[in-house]
Image (cartoon, rainbow, N blue to C red; front, side, top):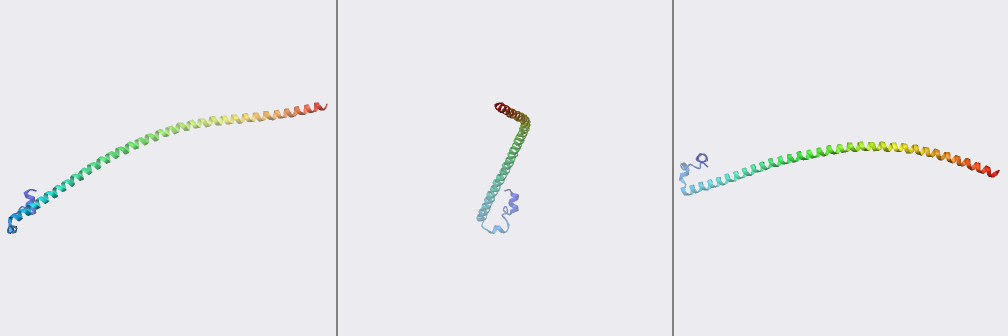
Length: 139
């Protein structure tokens, strides 16, 4: 503490009404008060340093968090783009496959119809032959 602060607080004055007290106890009290003020100032400075350290650490953590957030956002965005492209590709392939299968279904239905018509024609022919064989047996 400099002399200006001591005199402002009344610690630097040795004159006046305080001179009536014994000088050794006054000097002792003054020294004790100065030591207490120094201790409190040191403690305040220590706490100020702790606060500043915490602010610095907070700022660093916020910066790290912001960088990690940007990385995650970029990664997720890239993954979304990749998945969308893959979905479009798979959708196109599935559409082509569906069209191919639909064409095969139509073709199989046509073949089934032809086979049913052939079967009916053969069944009629068998019936005609059975009638012819039956009528020959009678003659």
